[in-house]
Amino acid sequence: ACGCFNSVSCFLIIFSDCILLCQVVVLGDFPWYSPATFKFKTCKMPVTLGYWKIRGLAAAARYLLAYTDTEWEDAMYACGEEPPYDRSCWLEKKFTLGLGPFANLPYLIDGDIKIVESNAILRYIASQHNLCGTTKEEQALCNMFEHVVFGFRNGFVGLCYGPGYDEKRPAYLKDLKENKLPKFVEALGEKNFLAGDNITFPDFHFFELLDQHLLFESGCLDSFPTLKVGHALVLSCVALLGQCSLYHRCASKFKRTVYSLNSGGLLNCMTDLLFHAS
Image (cartoon, rainbow, N blue to C red; front, side, top):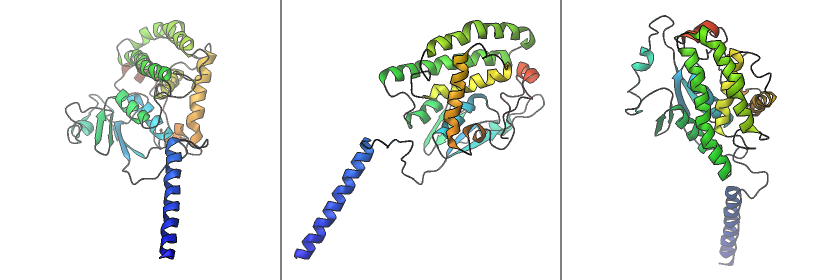
């Protein structure tokens, strides 16, 4: 009986120590612990991100999935290369994936969770990896820049897809340098990232837009050292993935255009500027 008691006692001590260790890990009492460096492996199915075979609205989500070391698959749809740019590869599957009445590209499927809309996708990924701000101020600024950056994107897309690209390009570039970029410089101030000293999901979208504008006009950031540093800083963060750097991982092993071929202005100025792994 005494031996049995001792065995039970040892078990209870070991079990209680295990519980204590779990509590310490969950509560983050170890100074070296962070969700990004200490992960429990699960048998979860890979996340699927669906979009056209371009950077477009999916680039930032691809960066975010790679940065968070999420296991994911790129479901890419290639439209026809000649007018009317056949989209049947997507349209035939659009309402077969269980995406609901608002089915659209991009979409994200994570088990039973199926969502569309690029900002919703970014926020969903970020919310699982503490990339929505760590303080109330950061969270508020993260919410704000989510929409500010998207507005910045829409202005550029309007130029690229709209008529009269050649005529409108000089005015857009002038406004970019005199209005749009100075506002971001002022908003950044002394911060490392848009919302503060911690990277949040709008930084990935902003990084992609700066990258696109560098393709659009290679010297557009020359007068904005703060933005050049910011672009390099995000790139350095995402490059921490080592040999499979984010910049190349998101490009995959094929050439990918920035926007689709039916964007008139972009077809004239950027279809040869492709995003691909070296």
